[in-house]
Image 1 (spheres, one colour):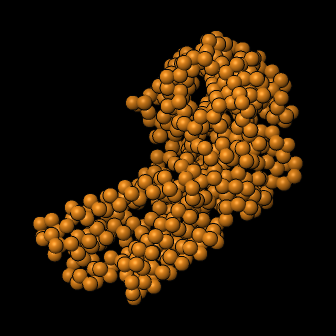
Image 2 (tube, one colour; image 1 turned 60 degrees about the vertical axis):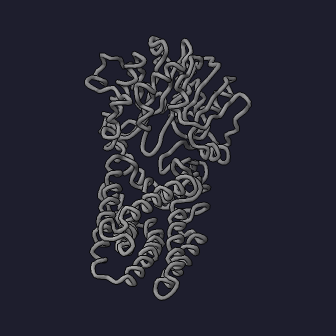
Image 3 (cartoon, rainbow, N blue to C red; image 1 turned 120 degrees about the horizontal axis):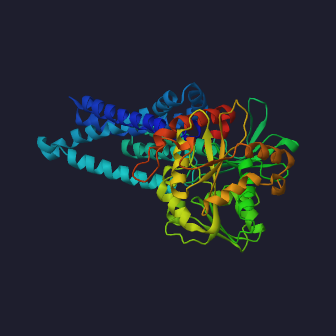
Length: 502
């Protein structure tokens, strides 16, 4: 659901509330069903529930690729509720009904006082733990969402068939198992090599998909000929894009590189937090710097290597870890630190706190500079104000640049610079865009963005009244929810549904 609905606080509220509602209904109606039933009918229902659940999950795999897009276009919050019901309601109600059903079957052995409830709920909960571990470590990092659901559907169907052994339960179980296997091989939504067109009649071709524990990465070619470009998407969020000539087509890479080099002309050591397509680390290794890249997702490196030509040389060190833990205890020896960390619909909350930026400050050598890529929503500025206030608290002054954008697109990028010596930021206004090596059209956009430069300190109106984000007091999820939903609506309206389907 993430590529269609995002991961805002309101979306999670919909998913979790639907889950709990369905569990409650299953417990209730399972208890009602058990009243006055014979042991034989209870045992039949015990195997019928997973058989029907498996069949429903097979049907959901066919339904959700064509339903999630329209539901998200209708309403992100309401659509998330309806999508959760579509995928989860039937199997959750049927399988949670097994708990009271099993208690009824155990009653003759345990008596009326306990009736086996403690044992049933112990086994149920341990089964949930096992399911979480299998999903997190064996399925999600290696399989698409569709194939993960089909594995679950096939397993439920197989268990029902083995337990039922005869009659309708055996037929339904085998039918669900066969359907899951056929769909798993056929892969009806398609992942690689499929072409679709958007509302402007541009072709979108999925070149590769990389399931991972941190979302599904997709490499997509958009358009044709000289006007085409290649994108790296993470659950619908563009990590970077290359034009037909193999150059970065997104302004943030050119602007952050040009601004950082203007402030630190000859960097010796560079720390890059977030690999993306490998543009920034490749550029600074080419400048003769030693580069350390911290990336949490190994599949991102595979995508950058396979489809964006990223080949780290001997001067680059790749570290696969969370940026927060990697910079903790960092000693000051980096001339430049780049922060380009995105997940879901924005920067993760634990990477926007005073404590995190204090660790980043400690990474800087004397004269060192931090360059940050962030989102900015003109209609919902509170998350950006809170981030600026947090940076000002740590660094004393921040250079803030709003990427030039048409009025019809309220969400854009913001480029932030902070320095070990705050006075160094005064020179950013003199940045020579032409020296960046960006294509002429991109250089013109960069000049337009540079006109928005503001130097922000504690007395600036931009941070007046804004709270500082800390590990103990971090309301970013609530502050960012409206902006995240605005971004996700635009993504759903722009990217064809088959590209978003995992």
